[in-house]
View 1 (cartoon, helix red, strand yellow):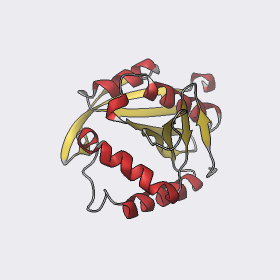
View 2: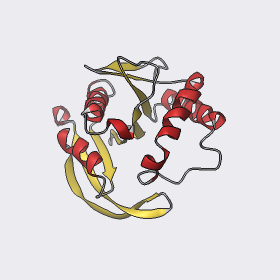
View 3: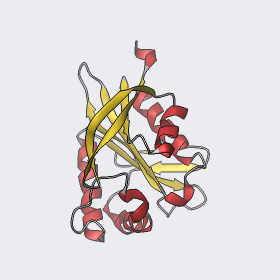
Length: 186
């Protein structure tokens, strides 16, 4: 995976970041701490520091170079220095599976404007057209209406409920298993 990977949409820039962006990423997480807390795993000690964000960005780059993941940070074209979210393909598996899990997060003040649908849609196209994946999974807490809306707009299909699937903010949460297949491969 190329370190300089980036995608453009009508309103957004999606790009891989290195550790020089740690302050911008930390600012994003600080700004959205309360909002993201209910949808994400409990944060390790020191998460809200520039040092830990730099370490995560370096770790992401290594995983991308190994072909295990893709994480793109989201910027509005009119403000290319302020992180507004990220979208990722995690746990990329090759061989006969050709699958991954998608995760996404957006600045709380920008939800409901179609930004995440735009960003996630671009990454889905990249996953299918460039990476040659067959299946993308998105596991969503049932009460996370904005995330469900994104998956539905992108034509992900509900494959059922997975009880106590992920530990989110210290609690084992049920998740709806949403899937999109690359039907051009079938």
